[in-house]
View (cartoon, rainbow, N blue to C red):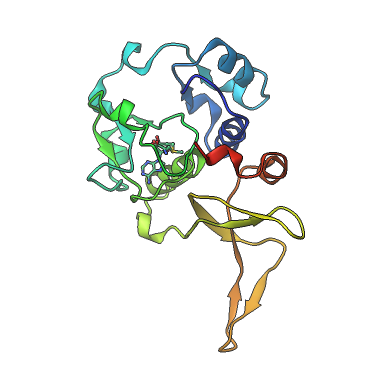
Length: 207
Ligand code: SAM
């Protein structure tokens, strides 16, 4: 985890705990203030909240797989047999990506990628879980890059990340030009993200 826990990240981590049992989630390298924020969340207080750095926990490095867009191997369903832990950078996404996953890469963990395009942390966990638990290949998971999210009648924000695509619950089907009915899709976002976007705009990605 990076030092400051951004509100965006907190929403992403709460989202993660809706599809991964919080008892199976370990947050490491937590600052005291981030630890407090996670403890104040009803869903995340059940997770393992550690102030220790990943290198100070007594785990064998070859059982830990770093998820890294720059890895030269794609994550495969069989990787669930060789690794016990999957490690993600607790980093707010940025545009252009600053490759802060490099801090973990330098420690020498074996690694896998989910494609070269930057995902949000909750998306990276969702996709990893789907590949390992459902034994799905990454090519079978639908995604949307750079989705444009409408925040009111006149404004929208382009999110500079890859998201998993899900059917739009509000607009079930669309008619295409050749009269086919097509399901409208939307990015899978953490609950509360659209409200936060309304509050913050796209300021958070620019450095
Ligand atoms: N721009 C960030 C960076 O500087 O590395 C990307 C951080 S991303 C929001 C947070 C974490 O999600 C990464 O550290 C990585 O563990 C995981 N992740 C995101 N996209 C990924 C991909 N395409 N392949 C593998 N892991 C990914």
